[in-house]
Every structure is written in C-alpha cells, then in structure tokens.
Length: 235
Ligand SMILES: *Cc1c(COP(=O)(O)O)cnc(C)c1O
Image 1 (tube, protein in one colour):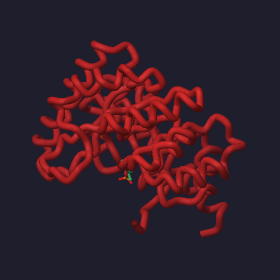
Image 2 (tube, rainbow, N blue to C red):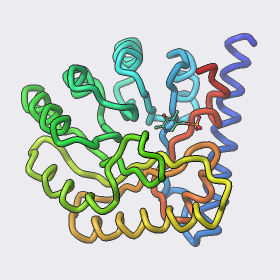
Image 3 (tube, rainbow, N blue to C red):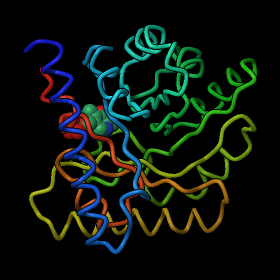
C-alpha cells in the first residue's frame, strides 16, 4: 500500500474504533468520551503515528524502550503527544522511560517505582503510573495479585514525583465469558475501592482489540488498541 492509503486506512480504523467504544459505552449506560483510547503503536513506524495524529489521536502506547525513545525523538515536534509505556520495565531502562514517557502503565515492583521516581526528581517531572494487576491464573504474567493492590498503592504514594492513576491488566484470552465477566468485575471492584481512597485515581486500563466491549461493560475507563488501529503485527 502507498503511504497515502495507509493513512486513510488508519483514519478509518480510528473512526471505527470510536464507534465501537461509544456503542459499548451506551450499553453500559456510560458515555464514549469517558473512555480514553491508547493507540498501541509497537512495531509500527512513526509515519503511522503521524497518520493517527492527523486524525486527532494524541495518546500512544509503546512496549519497548528502544522504540519509545526513537519514536519520541522522531516526533518531538508534536508537543502534545502523550506516551504510555506499557511493557515490562527493566530496572536498567528506567532512566529512558522516565525521560520519554508521560505514563507508565506496567508498574508492579516497588524497586521500579523508586527508580522511576528518582529519575523524575532529577528531571523535575511528574509521571502518571498504573499498577499492573495479574487477574489471570497463569503465573507467568507480570503484575501483582489483586489482594496486594492496597498495600502496594500505599507504598507508591510515598513517591512524590509519581501520581498513582489506577490499575492496568492484560487478561488472558477467555473462552468462558462468564469467567471473564467475573474476573473483570473483581478488578473493577478493586479499582473503585482504590478510587474511593485516593483522589488521584481515575483510571482502569482494561481492554484490547479482542476484549474491549467486555472491558467497557465492566467499568474500564481506558482501552489499549493496537491491531484495531494499526493493523496486524508480525510479532
Ligand atoms: C500489544 C499490546 C496491546 C494491544 O494489543 P491488540 O490486541 O493489538 O489491541 C495492549 N496492551 C498491551 C500491554 C500490549 O502489549
């Protein structure tokens, strides 16, 4: 496809995604505008991000530090871009993440939070963070168990350059919709309790291309769409 066709495709996919978000929101008696969209641009070129930007998208998610750094540098003239780092955080990469990200959605270790905080102190910057929760049975996934969220949030509160905005989860693919619903609801209950406790908490980031509707029905306030916006990946 020519670059122009790619741009039209991205614009169309974004419009479709917004329609789906409003439809799901309506079903849940909510408004589409209450649900924010992170466009996950991992493995895709900066030109794709520019195309989405031209269609009004400002918030993008990256999984790999190298890619975040390169794209943030290439696109530095777009000053209102908002970058979410959504991948596993290695402690030797926290300086770059603190420098280029506006949000880190995948915080699940205090050591990482402490390092991000001290880099942000040097940069005189505040970073929004989400606590990553593991709601699936598989132990291989990143994230802390739901039962530890309260004490973890309390510890992160002490870091003055981090703002705790809420929770993030990457669920397994569900074949059992009842089980999915039950687990999403548990996560939402935990989110609402945290929100009640901390003024800064307003975000539940749950839902990707395949489960966005279920996530919105269960109270998600933010979804992360890669494939639905930029097309299939080869990773
Ligand atoms: C890749 C990725 C996404 C986007 O996934 P799609 O299924 O392509 O929408 C969302 N969140 C995280 C954490 C990811 O790594």
